[in-house]
Amino acid sequence: MSCSNTVTISQGNTFACTFDWTPGASGPANLLGTTLSSDFEDRSGKIYALTVTTANDGLSFTVEYVGSTSAWEVGLGRWDIKFIFPGDTISRTEIFRVNVIDSVTV
Image (cartoon, rainbow, N blue to C red; front, top):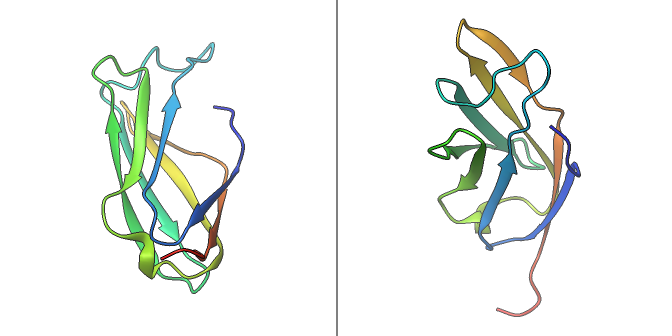
């Protein structure tokens, strides 16, 4: 998986990212049967569980926070995605950085 590893979000905005699955030479052809999970840790160290939804064809997935991001601490946070593939092989993405900024207009 390849993508930019820094996202900027205004505090209180929706947080969601969609990823496309590109099978590797030795990996699964899709994510069907794979368990995905993800957490965001804000600057203060508070952990927020993210919801991961895999597309019906298993070739993409969306990671989102279903609550309000208004409580996320302003500053640089981090998150990753965990994959448990069939056969219990575990893999994680590199750490993504999330720059939470305050809003000017309320």
